[in-house]
Length: 246
Ligand code: TIU
Image (tube, rainbow, N blue to C red; front, top):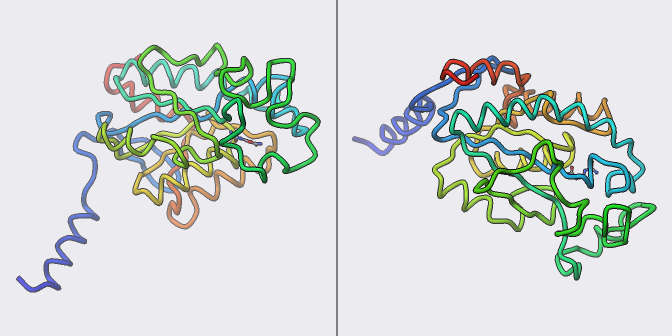
């Protein structure tokens, strides 16, 4: 076989390679197929610091109530995903108490009323171990579910997430959490460059800015799915229902 032929064969194999046991979700820009055994649900930064008054999100001048629409659908997605036996990974944005993992530029940025590390009503703003840094009660991780602590916006930057997913044989990600155009988008972009196919559940991601939310989702699915796929959670839940998941 010539080297040209073997390269063509490899390309054809890569293009035809799909999940072994495929479930199908109607999505933009076209159906998303996934095998529950090689897929993980990412729940990004559903922390009090972003969703409740007195935390980091509010200190940046945001109306934190805007993110709360994600909680009810995400609760259903989390329950069905667990029932299907699909891996669940939670993330939390935050910093060490001595701020040694906080770039000065991130500390200085903006005109926040409270800065990272300052004492607030839910403890020190965006600091690991503080009450505000915790995931909201409605979406609390179960024992054994990995929780990735991340100092940046992307969940792969300076974390063990890549090793965790590789070790579990994960190839596709269902992405949820906050905020759509910041930590969700950064993580989806990072995941793309690492070879993951990502499905973003449109009603399980939220933003303080409705227009940014809408456009961020369009950016994922544009250009034939330049960063991935977008679907409402009802279509993902319907795919899981074919497994007998309620
Ligand atoms: N400010 C904002 O929209 N988001 C963040 O700072 N972090 C996350 O998105 N988690």
